Length: 464
Image (spheres, rainbow, N blue to C red):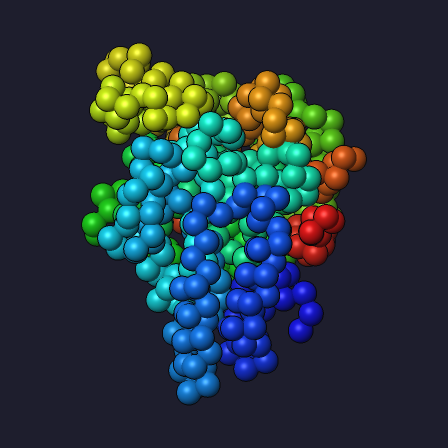
């Protein structure tokens, strides 16, 4: 097999199970690629290459003796560095936790290992999943493989960059205000924020208990569904975990969209935050393509983005202050500038602000639920602009908040971001699909139709 680095997780797992591909051969190819490209991309905080190769040798021996651990046997995965991997530091990309060694795997990591996946190492993030991209931290920020002069989105920045660059076929990320879907949008891959509570957060450093989600980043929709099948499920030791049935997320991937009702939230990008014309054109193309495939596409309205953003900000920063307040009092200089500024803002919200935001949040949940009684899936923008240059702090500060991802952290509905095309400058444009609670299979059904029609899973960064 040539170009092993572009194998999807599904392809790699099937080839390994059929003994057409050696886990050691795959691991060797990826480690060589990481050694060559990661100095340009800064994807890894901690590459655990020696342990990964030993695990690949063990996986190969198991296959040779007729044993398999599961659906991802021998397939490498990258882990965002706010998620615990036993024996490795969980630094959250911060000086504060530079020596924080995890005693055990997070539940999501344990489930991946149980399915046979091999952990390659810990990946760059924005500091504590909020402060970035930053140049004043112990490690440099990750860069975008489509053009390393541009940012890869965040806060799951290394996860998005590494998957897009072919350093590993899948990664774990977290999403509190869009932090899986932002790198998926900027790097042209598939990122899912699942339904709130579907994936356990035990062993994941928190940012906001009310808004935090864990989910998969992959190069195609099939892999995303496969990964969710493995990491989803009730965890009685996570207070936010949902006791809901999980699994069979790929069941509708081949059904197409004929007869599905799709609500297009145009006002997000047409009036609330006017999008770059290329983004708008990309969204219209997605809507036309799905309509041509048999879906019914009609406009729908939700509360405006500014209201969703305000509620997200009050809840996130209040809860983040509750977590970080002691360190910010004792060690403020050990934070990077961006994280310190964003976290300190939480000190100035009152209990009344928090309660009013929580009350308004319930009204917003009801508004999205009303829309999803009329429609099977909602379609809207993710990012309003292509990713800016990473060293242009002013442009990044301006464009990062220009997005439509935070509404669905506020409401907890599943939301998936993926490529909608490429800008004239060769950078990814994006689209977002939103579904009913625990209806990720329908999201994958719609996303799979768009992927097949546009062939976006075959588009890779040209410089890679």
